[in-house]
Each structure stands twice: as structure tokens, then as C-alpha cells.
Amino acid sequence: QSTAMSTPQDQVEDLMQQVADENGLELQMEMPGAATGTLNAAAGTATVEKEQDELTERLAKLRNG
Amino acid sequence: PPAGYMPPMSKQDSSSALQKHKSIADQAYKSITAGLDSDDAGDKARALQQYRLGVHELKKALAIQFSHSVDRAKAEVLNTKMRGNLETIENRIEELVKNAETPVPSK
Image (cartoon, rainbow over the protein chains, first blue to last red):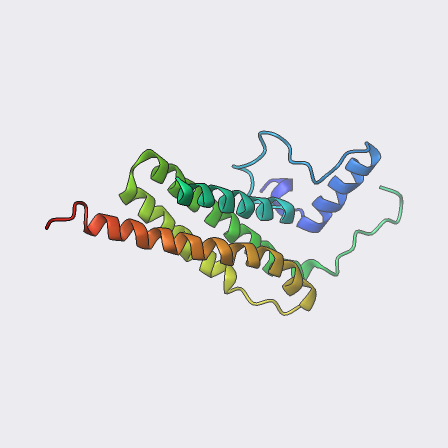
């Protein structure tokens, strides 16, 4: 069992926010290449919401095409 | 972290339902994305399968009950998006089924 798997989501998010704040980063910004694959373990709220937006866009294109 | 710092633990119980909610939404995203890829590639039978799996997962995520009103409010943002997509995908499934049943009008 890795540390990442057993660390509560809230603590991970708090830590990420803390690191982002210290470095003046915008946490909402998606890290390129980190889109899929590792999501199931710790899918962020912003990420899963963005996924649904992406589906909406692709589905809309499908209807027009 | 500073000495004596205690991370807030109160959200632990309530967040497990939210975590499950997000995890299933993520699964649905993957299934539907795969379906869209198949659909684009012209593999309609495979697209149908993947869409149906995605619909099943969307419904599963939408059915999750939250005992905390804060969680319910958070989940509602995602649920609204998922409901919209669910409707569109169900229409697409219907379309694909109809096309499969009548490949060429035969009269």
C-alpha cells in the first residue's frame, strides 16, 4: 500500500494548496499530461467537473457533425 | 508542518461518499470518452456498448445519497453536468440503435 493511496484526500488537497500558495501557483490549472490514469485514486472535484464539461463539448460536436 | 499542527479530520466521514461519487463519475467519463472515440472511428457497435456502460455509471453516480447537506451541495454541481450528458448520450444511443435496425430504407 503506497502512501498516496492511504493518505486522506482532504490532507492531500490541503498540502497541494499549501505548496501552490507558497509558490504562487494557480491550483485550478490542470497539469498537462496528468489528465487520466492516476485519477481513480484521488480524482479532484475540479477535474471530474471538467471531464463532464469535456463530454458535453464532444457530444455537442457529435450532434452537429 | 509547524509543531502541533493537526490536519482537520472532521470531514473524513462525510467525504467518503463524495470520493465515491467522483470516482464513479471519472469511470463514466472514461467509458463515454471511449464511446465517442469508437463513434468517431465508425465502430458504432462498440460505441453503443461503451455508451451503455457510461450511462450505467452516470446513473450509479447520480443515485448516491449524501447524509451531509454540504456534500449534497458540492455533488449537485457535478450532478447537474452529468444529468445533461446522460440525456444527450441516451439520445445518441437511441439514434445508433435506430440506424442499426434500418441500415438502408428497403422500400
